[in-house]
Image (cartoon, rainbow, N blue to C red; front, side, top):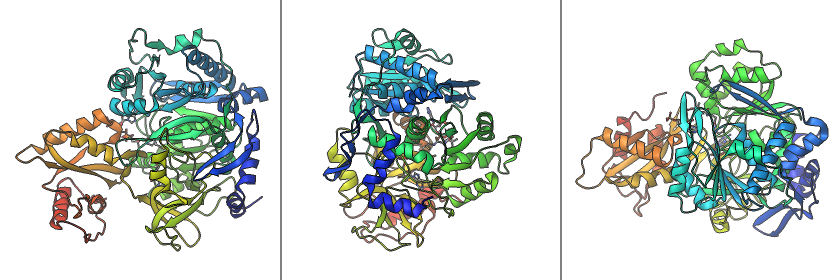
Length: 632
Ligand code: COA
Ligand code: AMP
């Protein structure tokens, strides 16, 4: 068996043979002409000339190979009291019928379809039905409000949308249909048709001429065959938060994505076809796209669709129950989920009720696993707890502990070593690689491996500006961190205005845009302050217009409601401080980084470029007024 070092070295020194060999695991309609196509640098493409269908690789070929009776999906929904197994053969029937239904509505190769659904198996059916006919899906997380959905509709310009009457968040029923209707009202682009899954928990009156019933469409449609696409054709667009209110449409191609994700199942996660693999996330996030949907299905595993929470559905033993009931071999979730469990059952008493049997390893991502959470989970589970670092942009881990190649010793707080394919380099602000243990900006030397974004949807210019221009020859991750003397990667946080709340990536810029529209607000800033449960929480600072005098609690309630209405509850925006001025540089740039340090109780130096040093003291006082820095 090759060691991690050998595999890694080969992936960097000879990517053609490394990924060419990996690509043999995928069924191609036509083989590629080139593995790595660098004819249009800095745009790199993988498997140019190749043709395939991702849905065929994720479903049909498993049925053809005799896996038809194996569960493709286990839908476990404590909030509706449902456990349902869907075999690969049944899933094939549902996906190909919905694909036929989409075709009957005029959806063809290259068209876009926006999916806004809760954690139900039909969300996966919708994604794969698009992939089957070469349509490009764009799933929008259900926790986003209509305005955010509208922004994505305008950018993706879907011919059809697929949604549901409601989602269920713990004990709350979230009616999706009114949110969808409102988003379409707000959007300039209007989809021709909407397919609505009616759930018994909420009514969804259908708009005549526009809306169709999901189940009726499925029942009345003929199954559609797979449509062949180019390896470089887009499979999906997934919007993610950037530094402004306008989200970035990350493009994922078909060929490189199928190859890389298939490869990760054995090499990163150490599982085999037929195993039960569980990513406790949401289909609306990249973790959901890659590890609830595509990777486990491409690899012939059983994937779990869990419509519940780590706590409260019904208790902090929910994860142990699902692992034990379904024979889960690997669980992947966000550290915040484990902090939630720890908060309710710190001694892990509930674990004693379950036999975790063949459960082998816990993988965490979405935010850094802090050493305390690592230790708690490792002591409790007595199995490897693996932090791995990645982003929407990459679709799979940039650094991790590739258990399927070689389980390396774990260092708490580190995402272990760069994954094969990623030449991770820490650079200084003036683009010089730095020595070990020196903090800097985390970059990846080009080319990025397969599955990573080839560009942004309809926006090559923004792709270059955001990711490639800042450090020529390198991909700019937006994260800061260091690599230690043993080559271990430590990711410490973002260098931009992106924050991470309960593993959800959000833009403080987008939040500032919302606050700025309040009639009484002259100026504002939002920072992400450390939180022991959700990792970070947004804190807003507002300067009122001259002559305006407002009750702070009333103003806060209005701003909180605006944020829920315009970005969504997922923003977890609940804290506002009113100040007389914001600390700025002489050129007018708000010193958000310094404000964040004050909120976190970290050491900071007063920047020499500051306009008015006393403004920082005022921020400190305002933060104290709302309980910062936190004492825990
Ligand atoms: N649809 C509608 N609303 C949603 C939603 C969805 N899909 N997901 C979250 N929300 C709402 C929540 O109900 C909550 O609303 P509230 O303010 O009215 O209570 C709000 O958005 C904030 O949600 P969240 O930050 O998730 O907090 P929570 O207290 O509901 O749950 C955790 C906290 C830790 C249990 C939960 O975030 C979790 O399980 N996270 C780990 C897994 C994960 O999803 N990771 C993401 C990427 S790996
Ligand atoms: P997303 O695109 O939503 O997956 O968020 C990506 C960002 O989350 C990264 O750029 C990091 O800032 C953060 N992140 C994700 N996983 C980790 C991890 N394991 N360690 C540290 N930060 C992480």
